[in-house]
Image 1 (cartoon, helix red, strand yellow):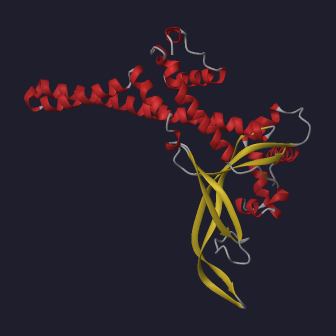
Image 2: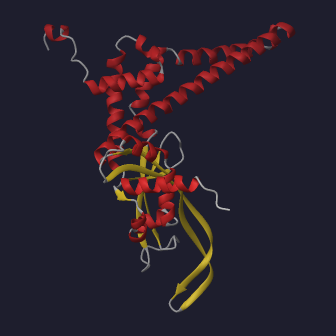
Image 3: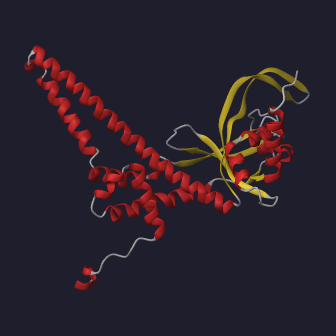
Length: 315
């Protein structure tokens, strides 16, 4: 590399990376802009984190058709919902579905894609089991069920859904970092309050008994203040975004169930093998997630029927 190569300015950031950096700075702390060369410092880790979010979004299974008809024909959909009416209720109650339909009123009939998330529950109990020609009662068994069905990021097509999911995941990573920063700020305030109390006690009781405690508080306070300085905060953000898998990941799950939702051995004749993934985020609660196809007209009809029923009181 010659002298003129060293003097030549670095290439400009591409538009997407620059936009992602701007989003990160605005979300975490606008004062990060005061650090010289903050864009160059952030560029690699921001790009890495967003690329990881794209890979996670693309790895979500699907799309699966979610409809009343699919409940009767698809073992997975049958396991996810208690009844076909539950499918309609989910569509009717979903605010993002309502917003999507309102914003796409002139779109011709067809399907849209979204992410479906839900909580997995396994309930232990007793039931009956057929063993040959004998019915065995009070048999210990575990039942699989799902709750809190939630639709997110509806889009006209699967590519659009993946793109919106990647953006939402990147924003989620940033919000997770902000939550950590808020904890440090709360700790700083608590230390300041504790320091004020210790100083008051030192004035009234004499400094000898509180000197050590005041020194400890001062050191801890100095550490929190230093951690929140823009340059140090930028350094911590770079390290956080360089390892996004610690805050966002997919874990595969495979279970065998019968048509009643009872977990059974995979080799049983009536077993349906369910394969899905669970998403772990800053929420720490695990979501079963998949991409789904929804018929717009079925969703619109579900919303209209739900709203119509709410207008009347049956006496």
